[in-house]
Length: 531
Image (cartoon, rainbow, N blue to C red; front, side, top):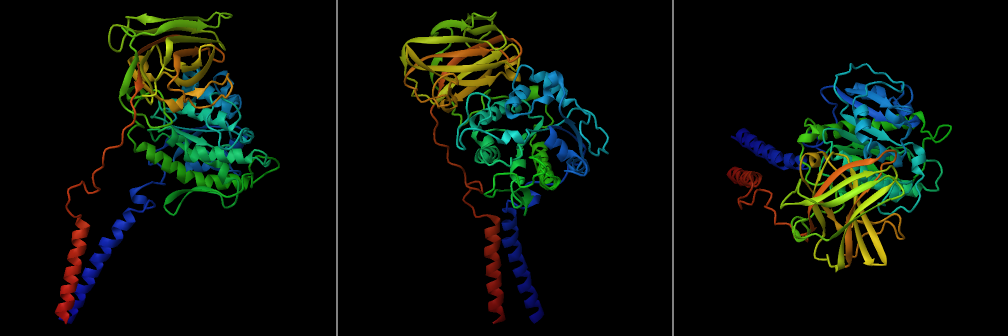
């Protein structure tokens, strides 16, 4: 009888341990089986790396060993270097150059070449056979001079590309709009390595922390096809890491912002490069597995819904509180302007050949010379109060995807206006039909050609006009047609609806609680029986 009693006590105790321990482990973000998977892909995946000399060293056998290690993790690796690609685009990998790669009229040409490249441009072991098809993973990195960023650590995103904190943030916000059109590709940002010179080291640190921690969140980015590896941070100190440790991704930052692993110059040493390899590979596997399981990796871009052209920096509210222009009965005064010193042509007028609703939409035909500009302006006789809205929305249809355009707001006095700009690019869906664009006020930034450039739009009660601008490309004309309809003010955001209880809101106790209570009752009964 005593043995049976002891057996029952031990059985109940074991059951209590199961109830108490297993849920705690499942809630631990480091519990790998239920969360991130650092294991290599089961099948060979094609990857291409855009880089220059530091990336070449990182890939090379006997230096950083990255190419060989990637192969051992089932990645078929190709790479670009100086002289690669159409227009030798491989020569240009500084931060301001990424908009040429990913947000220019030549982007379709560059991406076609990049996705189909399968050659090596650096020396590393590649034992895997080419599985065929396009590159699925796009890694890209700027070299160490790009850690010499001007400005201040907390500067907000600007309105054009340059080697400052604000200019760099602008670039990455812009190229994110292209990444949103290709959820079938995985884009891996490799931060630029640090410099030995501490002059602008605090700016480099702040910018790279922004990339890792804030970039995607500020833009409410909806997909799992973009990730960041902080190569910069890993190379700043022995105890600085960006790795998968203790069952979770850790970004460990120290007080050092300069290069801890120098060679004869600011190229990271072999030791530093190998440290980066060891920390990067498990993270890449996690990034890949997240993306592959997200449901977008196997879908062609044309079949993916694109709910908005803008990637907003704040939450996008739903609904509208006021129609601004429908180009049927409601059309502000309309006028076209362009650089008359060039061969630029622009017409903008309500037309009935395509409309989202009603009989007409604003049709903008344009052929803008390289480096030139044009603007279709809709003006009011008196300043408008748009403070009841939280942003601007409209529907857009385009002759083709990839057309860069601007939306402008003009405020102030008639003889002293201020211009605020939001830049976008037509997506695949807009070429086949109508797409809704929603732009919160916070995304309109004071124009770069004016004083106080980069300031946020805050004059919602004093709007004189709004406009659609088409600029020439860097080395080619910007040509096509846009249709715009139902320009409206976005509605103010409302409080989120209450969420149900974690158990579904049924009001019934969870199974674990019932079993726990039952076990204690049985245990008390057995102890009393013993007595």
